[in-house]
Length: 121
Length: 107
Image (cartoon, rainbow over all chains, first blue to last red; front, side, top):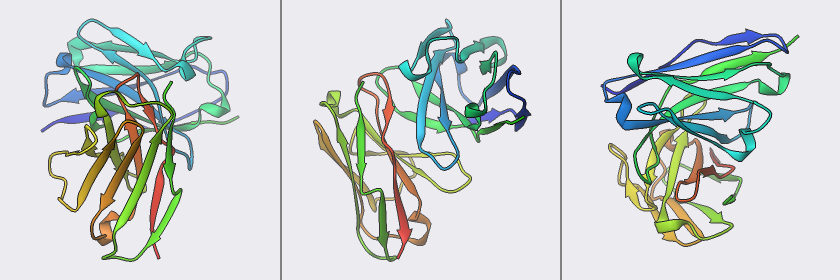
């Protein structure tokens, strides 16, 4: 059974760092891209970036690249992708999903359950 | 970046009715690399349609997709109670972008 299991909800203060995870199982993790998608409260889906764990090739959405907003990484040895922040802001409060994408021009065919990140002083 | 505009923002219909959702692109979507997702409250999105008109595994045939170029449509032939949700289009032919979503609500 294909699974993408994300780490649990987080409550952080502005300025703190955070790393959330997405662990894949039931498929060959290194044959797929893993994307991260943000959903702010009551809003739509926003693609943040994507990584190919086999070689760590990483692409970012223009909206999330620059000024080190977020960093996407992966550890293929444990089939896990990560999304991290060095300094959180209140505006980072959102649900974050990871999703799987096959190689080539393909959609996101399987999603994790989501990780809720709340940033509040 | 390709901008996707979904309309209407909200669609109020009754069970059994036909739903027609639109997704317009700011420029032509390469090879009709367009997908539709369904999201229910508190759950992750689920892939319904890919390559504009192909149903994903396990998706009922009341869901159909059509279109090419800059205009795409998701049709639900007869709404079932479980179909009331938010629907998003996504293009994946030039980087990746999502539309803003259409909420299908019970009238």
